Length: 115
Image (cartoon, rainbow, N blue to C red):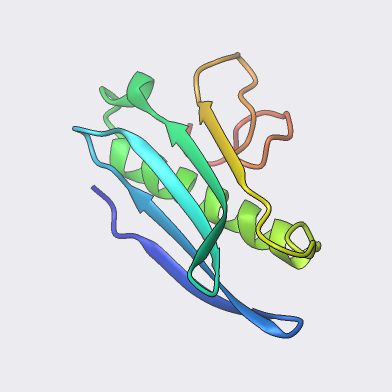
């Protein structure tokens, strides 16, 4: 299980908190939540059951966590959460759905990093 990533980001007149956690081998899901004032505005989950037997699991999970976290930071900075009131987004993905897996941000492309 990897240590989580927590970040407070000032944006416009608010401070947003983005939190990314690893559920570990017994719950192989990476979860990222975006908060504003204690309200969850978005969540993104990536299941990594299919890579549990990887001999580089820790490295790969750490990479996936950083990439997923960065994707939601970028979404915030691009104004994805500017609408009045919470915009509930709950996106779940599985990293093995296709040969060229979607990146945690949902755009296609080949996986980078230690794969």
